[in-house]
Image 1 (cartoon, protein in one colour):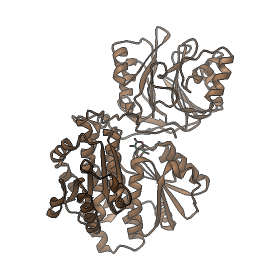
Image 2 (image 1 turned 135 degrees about the horizontal axis):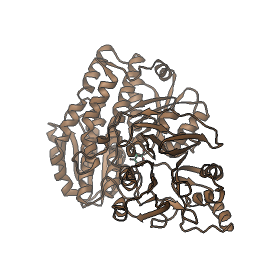
Image 3 (image 1 turned 30 degrees about the vertical axis):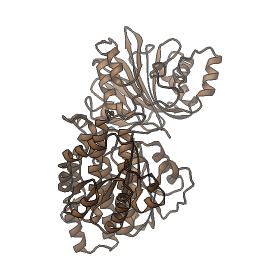
Image 4 (image 1 turned 120 degrees about the vertical axis):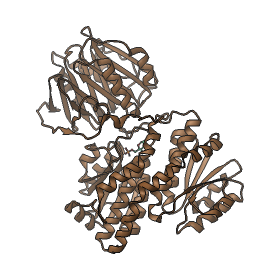
Length: 607
Ligand code: G6P
């Protein structure tokens, strides 16, 4: 949610910042802007629209200064236009600030500053920041920033540059992410590591309440009182090529195709021979065994993974499990006790509501485990224990590979816990390990259906509404499939538990309504089939995701996507893959910007 990249060093400022912004554009793409030092002055260029619109004015400009900052915006305050684009400046265009977050007390600050003669140009909350710095500037940018941050309420990652001190790049972090990339004779500040990778892998995740003052030769980190603090440099493993499309038309498609390899990686990481090793940490194992209730809290796709996790934990490990949206969980005074384990699931590790849910649990002395993709992210750092899903950088705004990787980790967690609790015999455990080892192959077989799915997409690309129905493990699949389709194709779509369909949604069925059933041959097959017939008899168009060789489905469905036969507990990890592809192809055919759907952002760092 808004991406920032700041640079101090000798490389070409314009291209370092634009290329950095390209990597961060998934965080917001309402407008983009850059402020850089040129001829000892601050030059500001900003434009509503996608980054390519900014490229058209910045490309080719050579800044002869060494410091600059860029921003890609997801609008919160003030509509999308050139003026509201970041960075924002003070009255004399000498101080520029890029901001990610929300300044909650901006109205009173604005009034105060206006009374002192400051002139505001935009409708944003962020513009108060450069004016405050201007107000407090008495010869030291650092001191002015220190005074400014004490006046701000809300969440803010800031990157500040100024022609008054043109060798400095200053970063501030509170409740929005900001990383420092430590290079040789260059420093970078960015909202996430993807923008840093091509310059350095040595990264410091700034903590809340940190201010970082960088020159190209070094950096100093202090708290909001100005006291020096030490932060550890960590070297990250991601390679720059992991954030390229590798020949695929879209990141989303590339990421769907990475799913088999991510299963392989996690199997290698979390299974040894015929045993699970996810819980190799003794303390974590003990903690999990001691809890009588688990509580998943997550947002979007990650919560859908939590819905599946709940089913697995209850069925296999026989532990009472709840799952809720973080945005609900945090405000509804959930009943938590010392016996509860709060489990946060997040791809980015930066979702504001999920972080707030963790803090709520911690305030009540409740332990938190998180299941995260991005290493060293805020959620990973703030949780008592972390399990990584090892999906690599996910750039497409619609989450795909992170979802199936979350599912695999949740399945392993449930099974290992079940084994530890004595609910699985050695024989059963060995069989289950064997089954899980088949996942990469199963996923690859589903990817071979791509052309077939593309043809189905052609037929339904102009539909106005879609319904997805599934039972048991595939009810969350229905929810996730509907979310994928609406996110990227803007077709209204809803997922329901198949048995609930008759209590309302069935009223929507007519000959124009495509209804997608996730109906593999499993313990709820016959029940789901009854629901399918109920839709059929009302004229709905049926697409079925079914088990290969299930010929009877062909009689009733307009289209069948056959997935391989697999044990029921593996189903949700595989049945979503054809539906990710279906959403992708429909969106492409409708001319939608698949990787950057309108109004969305990948990392939602505001509540
Ligand atoms: C945003 C993204 C979704 C994602 C959700 C939760 O809404 O667009 O794709 O599922 O945030 O993100 P997280 O990083 O916490 O999994």
